[in-house]
Length: 532
Image (cartoon, rainbow, N blue to C red):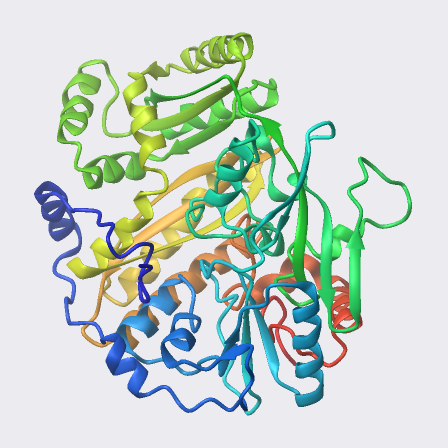
């Protein structure tokens, strides 16, 4: 069964090796291991539902609790401490567009607020109820999860938007196809959620981001339906898909999505490359992107991430290899690990690998054993379970990300880390911080930052410490002209910074679009836009 206050299936565990525990203790000291609130304790404080009986709405307390928060660190703190400020009053599980229309009519007649819900994996507060006087109904899309049509000639597939990543791939594999969209939340997140938050999969360098894959679909809004035909291209005015991509449930509920699919590739391999330092690695991946090297993924870890992730992995033989073998070759403490992937038929894979390794060697890259790349591939959807283990060990972990042009990448990478370390020092907070370039483009890259710090005995203090670190990093990103989100969306946490990117006129335009689709403000209040 899925964890109610953590990540993933409660039968799956990520053990922390003794060497990793020693590393964390030496780097961070002891974190608080105080017991978490039990589900029974939290259920006892859930207020009675403000909704009246409806056969299509569940007001069961456990179901309401399981839909109360997402996967951000503030969500974890709230769930594990039992300090939740709001709960949905009920959860609906529509199985058709007609049922969604009935939900809209119900909401319009009664003034309740609606929260569209996919996989519940948001890390910025997309699905959290906002405290207020009006009842809140969460609309869980999991029953609309079927493959509705597959056009093999056009290579288009239409799904119910509530389908999760593994089911998409399972259905397509039966016909010899793949979507190729693999965010780290792949195990639980849904197609509709990917579209509503502009998700980016780990191999988007080859398959494309979700906006590249989203060809069309159907949306139900409070004022009526919106059909988005999957035209190959169109010059007929603005592209209405842009009103839905990144809309975070403010313009309607996505019920169907038509996506571009590909035949399952003949071959796919992942490899590791070590560079002597961060600058060499950045230059290598930039050159690979700008020369059009046909890879499917480029992921470059900075020295701190290279060291920390190897230690936390528990692969002591790899740590020993890095510390002894690489040191002997001149790859010392500043070394960086690049994981890259090649995808395609035999000829494409061979040519891409040859091109890539030529570039990497020209920047003093050491092509490591393929075992390192394959180890990353096998654990890429398993690694989020480490969050559960770290919490139990007394440590909080969170991430943040942005994207900037190449001319800004090095300075902003350094700036985010330095400002966060200074902020931590100002409150006498020990912290580990590391980063990688997660998505590479010809004109720039995404910087993805992870930070760990000890839990405080008082969960409110843990939240305050997180907030200081998050706000410090967000301001550094905005000041450098970076996007406040490359792949996590806006939700609640990033809403204060959106105007810096969109400008006053842009914000007013987004608000006008939301008002047009949802004139009574029923949908997902407080998300994407700061409420006036």
